[in-house]
Structures are given as C-alpha cells and as structure tokens.
Image (tube, rainbow, N blue to C red):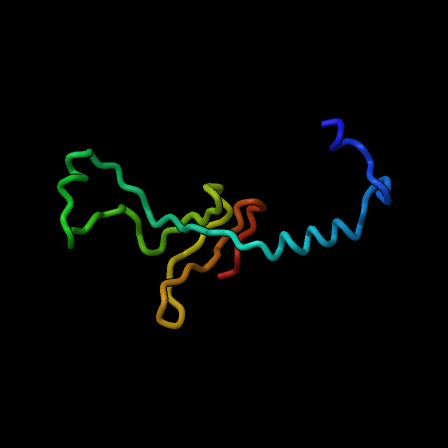
Length: 104
C-alpha cells in the first residue's frame, strides 16, 4: 500500500488530462457481451426433465412486449424484438439509466 501511494519521477500532481483522455478512449473500445432476456418460465425439476426435442415452452409474453437488455447482469435498457436483413434484431425503445423513451 505504501509503495502504491508513493509518487514516481515525472508524476504530475492533480489531474492528468492526457491520461484521462487515453483511458476514456480505451474504455470506449472495450468489447462487452450484451444479453436480451426473451422471457422466464418457472417449472419443476420433473417438468424440466420431461422436456423433449421439439416441445414448445410458453413464455407468457407478447411479441410486442419490451425485453430487458443487460450487460454483466445489470439491466441497461429495454428493446423490442424484430428483424433486420433477415436476422433477429432488437430495437432500443428506452434507456433505463435516464428513463428516456426512443421515438417510435
């Protein structure tokens, strides 16, 4: 701890704007894994064991319902499922951190 608190040769006192800008740029380049929760279903272990290939699990959600978008288990926003260029996509509809709604 004492070594970490010691100043090193050439260190500036106060804020280092060059270092802060570099760190901010590097953080923006960082890749993260996002997840979109389609739904949840409570079931007994017996029901889970009885599942077979091709069986349908009803999630009690409408295709128009908002889906939670999360990163590292933290809910960041909500989206709506759709399709783009023949692939499944999720369109952002609100930002949880600021309660902003996206125009539809």
